[in-house]
Image (cartoon, rainbow over all chains, first blue to last red; front, top):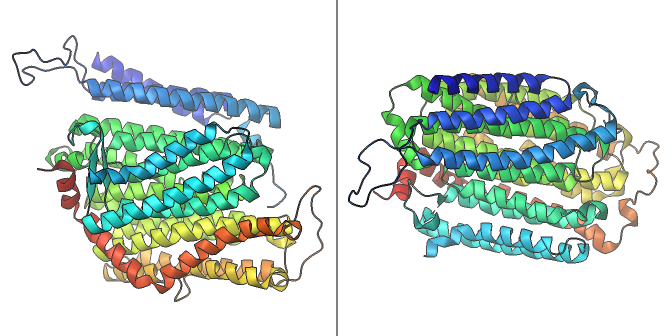
Length: 117
Length: 502
């Protein structure tokens, strides 16, 4: 399972970076989304994957006796999913507005000389 | 529960940003509210600063969870100083914004987002938890995205896309580093990580996470080679917005670097050398970028990069004197850089453009305003006894004594080119005769404004200039403060003890 997740994280990072480096703005957004998911998987993976052991202490014990699933990475991922969701929503609107204003999807075309420079 | 006072600046900003939403289209009420809010925030920050100055580091455990498990807010002297500077800059820029930003922009919740930005800045300075720092960073960048793109002009949208991509990418790298450090130490509390990181065997993984953090904060604070988004975007939004960005947003990155280098990865020789190299390159790229630009606001954007290099290099030298120089420079830089962009906005309002080739005769027509501006420009260069001069003594001395000659040379080069650039601005915009020009249609130049509006333009610049003068002439106080901060943060044990309460 770890190996699979590690490979998956690597693929997401690689494809995300590749898409960010493309010239199209839409692909840029896709790249950012892929990279964000890669980061989430990485945090999940680094929090050690433990199957079927919820972090609940039985009433007679005071500490965890055995290994347990760490709940913190999951809380972190939840937070970062929510945050990146908001950012992505903003990014999509930004791209739409830019397309409407400039009539181009090409990042290299975003170099209008303003009159002051 | 007196230590709760350190969270009051956050509460004030949050309160006002929510209240402002209820007056969405009523711009007059919004203007009054935002000024009131910033005055209250300034008062609270002064109270917090005095409290921490008297009583030392204060720690608030959110939800009363003890330190390594819950989120902590830590107010040490560095945080308190930066909170105070944030509210000073916030107040000055809000006064400037109510007159310089057009109503069409204000109608879309400008001030509400502005308060959210200040909230994020305050939170980032106060938090003692890595993931919480990430969340505050996200609040900062998402508000700054809105501020940079509000209005939706062509070049503004172009700048916004570049700004968005790099900052979002930086956040993702920060999160990656966070994941690695959590996997290594199993903790997110900065003080706890600082304790646990010494026990880890594999230095390679620690260096990897350190480099990830360094990359993320370098993107935020525009360090070479990750600085090209800054001059591409900072000149596009209204001057009030770029003033608050240049004064505070890049400095949050520097603050995070200072915290990281002193607390989590102290005395990591590899990182310190890397910082020195990066600072030299940053100073060179920033200063040479500034010298060829003709647009005043672009010149200022490049100067931000150049002076970030000064601070990063001082951090790389890493002794009490160098760190005190960095802190002093940070204090001076926040005030002066905010003011520079306000001046850029004022020049635009007077002349209708910020291109140096097309303007001139400012000194002839506005001698008093020119005097005000020259105080700021000379402070930027560091003409003694103004504020830029004093921190440079510490930086020069410490780098020379530590035999960091590259950084020493870069400091001289950076200061010299800043002088050249300011001389160029002075001779082009102030002394030269006014070339032929005409205003754009519908443009209301400075002379035709009402007296109250004129004062609203000049007052924030004057406030910040007076503070600059105080930093220059009251350098002894600031030096005492920065020495105390430097001694405080170079021995992270005090911080760790205050947070973890053994």
